[in-house]
Length: 214
Image 1 (cartoon, rainbow, N blue to C red):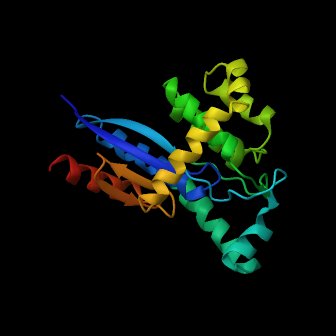
Image 2: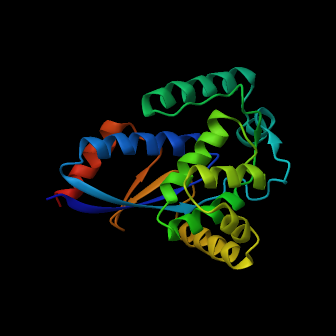
């Protein structure tokens, strides 16, 4: 009989290390499938809450935010591509030229959680952005991801205009920031233990095994 384990993931859809971290977590859980049964819930974190609707050119944004020059940007991108391959994430920077605000994504993810399809939608949004370079602020793109996740597209369009969903998401984001989450991904295990960053699969295996044995 497998032991249940609760995993809350605080992340953003435009965060490459969130995609890498989840990919490696999934690999770890596959290795531990005879021991652990994971209940995964996703929670909102906007890396760029004040980003305008049209987004910003990604190199310009990273240069302004982190002070990276062209050589550092190229090195950073290659590291993400390499780490993505290990985690099973297909990063195509040649497709992705802009970074976007993700509030709409988080609204739909909250709704998807009510439908039991949160991870399916998260993975569809990761693919839309990181592999196909699509605009995550576009309702058309978001509804296509909803369809890919097996959710109702007409209901999704209603949810996107629902101010109550927006309020709930912003309150939840604020809650995790007040808990001390200032960077993502953050993996909270059984409401007690924090694993930060896009850790390799072996690190997740070790951490989850240790936590389960306590």
